[in-house]
Image (tube, rainbow, N blue to C red; front, side, top):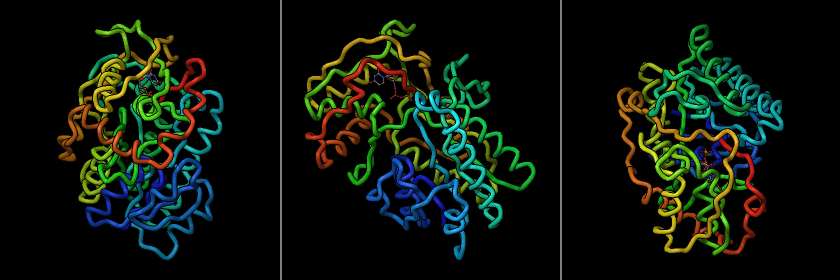
Length: 343
Ligand code: UDP
């Protein structure tokens, strides 16, 4: 299939492009490069453009036979979404509407959407099944939940065949070392720890040590980015074969605490990590663990990387291989007091 991949120059989108290519599909990336990197676009063409601009969308669809869309392009920082909600609704929701209009106008009905566990808010039950109530706690999560509703309406009215993949904590990097995770500023636990390990600097803050968990720190379900990429390709092929769409959780179905992650990073890198206990980060649920049975049963998805050591080892492989990995200044945010920032 010829697949338009919005946000294909970003962390997860680039891994999906590689997997699409390996499976014999042809990715075409649409990315405005606001956070994506052109050097991550290696498995197909790149159109530099924005999902909100009809002329950029026309450039993607005109003169091509696009079969499907994978939609990753979005803003992803929770704290920013709280401060600038309209920016988030305009891009994440407005951009998706414009993209859907263009896709449907060109007869494209297969749509795989990058959603998030942020649609759930504070879970009532763990592991969380897809049928759990959606109570997102911030504008970022609400943009994802709203788009899912739009997709469902489009499915009912316009024959859209869609899957919304709700990621838990994406982590790791492709072993090839060409693509990996890096945000500006970096807010995520594993890349922050690896940055600290690479530079011998710290501290990395532990946001909250009084949660009702065994060691008092938050528990998250980390899933290797290549297993996410694989789920996208399986979802696409499943939809193309007429399979049932809807929402799919993607995680490993088990969780690791922040302290366990710190120990794992220290073990994998062999570095001493300086960490400091800090207050809770507003909006962080104590435990987020996925019930992924739907993806396993319907898509035949089987995550291959099943332990945190291997996830961290692949991330470390990419991280320390980056030019300037040991020379760039540590993100300023990490030196600042703990900052509310949750996806
Ligand atoms: N976390 C932390 N220190 C950091 C970054 C994150 O203690 O510098 C914690 C955060 O509070 C959460 C977990 O690590 O409990 C994972 O956070 P991350 O931002 O990586 O992903 P999220 O779960 O917010 O999507």
